[in-house]
Image 1 (cartoon, each protein chain N blue to C red):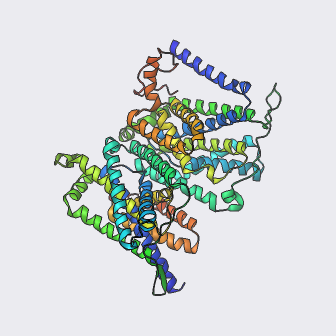
Image 2 (image 1 turned 180 degrees about the vertical axis):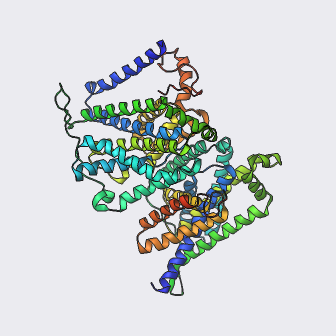
Length: 295
Length: 337
């Protein structure tokens, strides 16, 4: 294999992995703060794409002819805000009593996911929607050529992850989140406002998924069911990376991106998915707590 | 004793009525819908077995697919009779379940949901994309033969040419599977399953081998799914990977939750009710998943024990017309049915 091809697969894998990591991080955040799995997480990803399609592609670019790049970034903030708000509303409105009740939480979010999907289907239709690329062009380096939009998407994803890291380790809310994830009762006894932190955590998790949806929309396409594959990938990542571990999620995201990139080049995309699931089984047999998880 | 006999009487009347349906109508639409509901009831009742040990599987549709494909292939490629392939399909699904169970049954709660979800997706991926000459890829398997004629002494041989014999086949298998599930629930195993679910550590401390009991429940659940798969493939005569989506797996969980999972009658009620509602709603566009989604949210928020949880209230309201239990159902009684 020549070097250029290797670099290309490596870079593509890492860039995709950064976005995988971002989606999984949202799920990890919700899992560690609310001790529940959000089965509507894939739909939050999808909603991010829908906002970018509706606001950026259909409205701002087609109707108002606004410049691409600033509008795209603005739409991203808008998508994160809207979906994050939806997350906060869901948490406060219905989810809060089911914190820590695994099965109920899962069924509830499954139901919400079905509702979100069907409502989107009614508004959007089943045809795949494309979103124009805000960063057209190809970058050639060391014999590899990678689409610029992928590079920007990867960098933005890593930027968001770093931002989240600082938010969790540098602010008072972040401190409260870490306290809750360690010991719920003790945190409540210290006077942490449980309801508020949980709502923020859920909203933030959803916003991260939406951000990933925004980043993927120009690269792939938008339809009401794109979230399902991402939900499954996030599941694989958080099992491999270790439940509730932020660096673990990112590491496993990169790992999954590389497996998909190299696996689909040498075999096929399906083999790559089977390989990544085999990784889950191997992890469960050898190291059930995940790469960076603690018992 | 009086109440028990009245309850058994109620069930018998229901079964007799179900047996009489094809006498009343030969419309294939009604019989087909009924057959589909019978299969889904087998699925849901099976899924409930593993749910009683606290392990909720989102791979149930995949195990149905394993049963459907193995049964069809056993008949088409190996030349076995359907009547042998039916139990074998269940056993093959069970063997796969046991193999995958070794790594995944160590997980509990959310982590188990995640890994079964991923496993279900991967199984369907393999069936769709690998060994196309065996599984037929996205096209699936075509021309699956119907069951061989069944000779019952004293009756003309039962030829599977119309919907009516299929209706009776589905009904009979469903009744057998339900009786098995009820028997299991009332046995020592059923009690241990519930103990595990309620107090994992306590059950373990009194000497229950958690892993082997969870494995047992898991294997039985997947056996049910395999049987349902076999029944599905020989009636449809065509199976494709699109018949066994993750959505079907989710619906199975929905049926159990909406019905109530502390008794066998929960998944039966949930499946029958939701399927009939879905059938009614079919004409109104993609409203079926929406209705399911709303039903799920409402049930979780307002009816934590499903339909079973509100039956006593309806019962009291109807003045004990319902042949079910009249007192609280939440205390874990061992009656099962």
